[in-house]
Image (tube, rainbow, N blue to C red; front, side, top):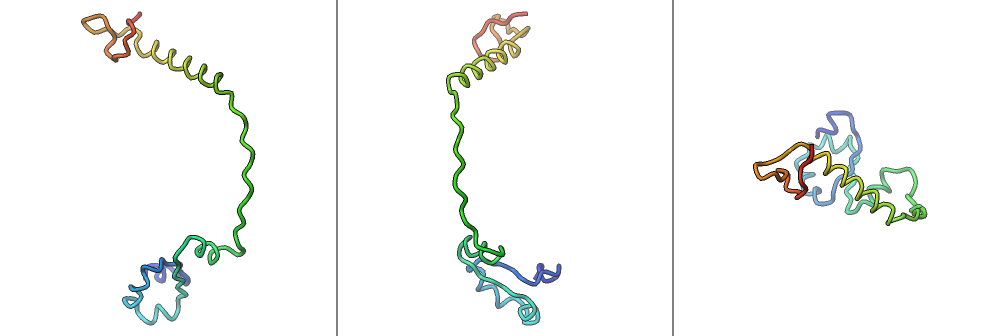
Length: 104
């Protein structure tokens, strides 16, 4: 009914909601086209002008894993140095728990 109030005259509704059609006034049912569907394929057939055709998968570029791991390790080390710098607990260990001795 909210769709009709906003000027929408066609609705795609899950088949499970068909039982609720009895609650909709006849005047609205006469002016609206209601499509009941069971799958997303049915939704796409109704909503789109033509049938959807799956596109071929694009080739995936090769990833240089050792270089990526090395870059991530360097990034992590830089973060830890910045994270721990200048912070010390009473024992002298950094409060973050990373195990590195804090430096100034």
